[in-house]
Length: 487
Image 1 (cartoon, one colour):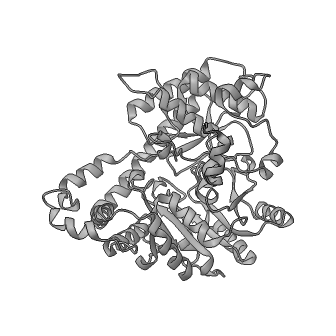
Image 2: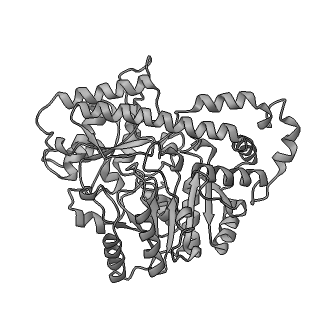
Image 3: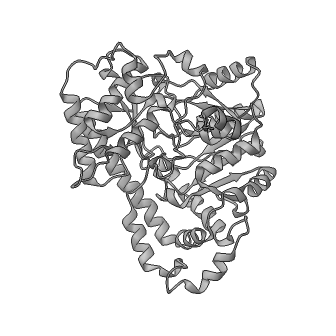
């Protein structure tokens, strides 16, 4: 008897046989295009350059120097082997005390020492992905929802919703005010959810923003606190790009706002943090839940058993982040190098008439290619993106995968490559923009990009996107796929 798809669906769970992980998107297809033809300066100089990965490789020389100078930080060296047994058998899900203290201290330094963090509120998780899911499990039930300003990181659909059953409701933001979230937009999204009988349990914000690279100002943050207090819902602040801000205006943490003279129920305030972006350690899977709610801390800590950071990693990180001289040097150098890379990238784009949203943080730019669209539709965006991937050989991420309501925006990562590779990428962009005068027309036969990109969505208006089911584009569960690193 053959094993059919029907048999499989009967034998496995709905999660196992469903598509909730979300792979049918341009975000996913861009990664597959890169994986099948990766750029290499000598072995494959005409391959696809990876510009869809928000990794921070700007300061690994400093990291390597520190590791060489501090061999005792690793239990797998002659200098550190005496601690091997104690570290290897430690399994308390509170984590090593020195690790929690070091992370709390680092979070304060990243925020200019304007606020302090309590090490007893540091809860470990398997990266920011695990931290966000833990927050969703703690704060909401299946069918409940979080409001999320658009555009937002595609992986949020998976992180908060795949296994928890939680919904994400987009909050309308657009380029007319540089995608800033407004109180009116929050009210509108909240009201739509109420009319649809959807219980809103929280508001999720990313500060600095992924994909915009912008920071929220003090007035906006105060407005968000006022909003969630009035609605009696939670505020989850993703601050994983805190140390990537390289110029004014400076980053302001929600932790600073609640210390001000403002009415605030602290039980509603939660921070998600990690070392993936600020330190460039996505492979270490160091995610942090920091909540001002005791019950959330207790529940999240119990849940952390499903995604602990290895004690070997904790030991190394504790040693590194306890070196205040190194930390201060790293933060300063990282900002300096990110600023130089950002300036180089945006100035080169400007010379060929290509602008980016003004930003001062993150590991990417929000590139505006609307003028290259034949028509202002998402179909036209897909055709342009297809050309960039397969002809220009750059994996950039289209705005539609970030739920952007306007076609023609693209997130372009610039911190995950060396200077020579960046110059090649810039040269490809310059040549591409200069080679045509007319916008690129979409094919009338929509099957063209369905067959080539495996995409199924049609042109949509802003209202359609705001109320449509979330289009997910997170990491791939397929073994050895590069999408396990996608951010």
